[in-house]
Image (cartoon, rainbow over all chains, first blue to last red):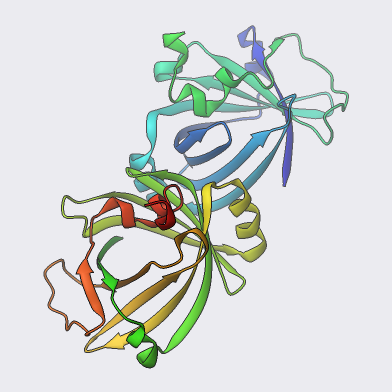
Length: 155
Length: 155
């Protein structure tokens, strides 16, 4: 599957009033190379393993493969990961005809809040909420894989 | 699960007369770090993704996690792998009370033949067939992950 998404900084906490749900996420990377990342995620007792390929030039679309695994397995795989574990709370925020996923980072990435919107095509129109800031799509330093190696607090 | 196995070079082709089955394998590594390898394998139209942790000091036991995936997915993931794809035929060879898996490598690793035997404990006794040569358990250069980066023909 090819994933098309755009990523933005978030400039205020106002998104919270429209959030439908919040989910705590722990994740790590078995491989954090830009050419191929292998992510292990544990959320709500459920696990997932996700492989992503290299992005297109604009950083908008990217090959993605994902498989569910059990929570215990995810916990064991997290121990093998490189870099620092990422912890964050993900808010699901509907706006216009789209859903924004807003990630509020914790630990060594505390202070960073980013929103992602998934699109059908790279040029699909979507309404922008007031709390949406500068676009950072394709900027490698905002990739979660990079945040596990070079965290926000170190910038 | 912890995997306990010992690995040997194979000194003759005599193992073929006792081989029960042969399976052609294509495999690649999304991550080939000694601390954590992520392997993608395609055999007989079926796929597998396997994560292995670092070995114990003797290189005999190692954390291993494995998941079946479909063949098409494995084919797509193979394209993302680092290094060179490994192709080999694996023979299943019963001897005494154990099963030896004999890998006859092809392509850039042609000429290399290794046998692995899986054990319950690191010191379990097993009978050695006449075609079994020098033990290479724990020698990193015989790890498949390393063979994908530094192939036998380059040695």
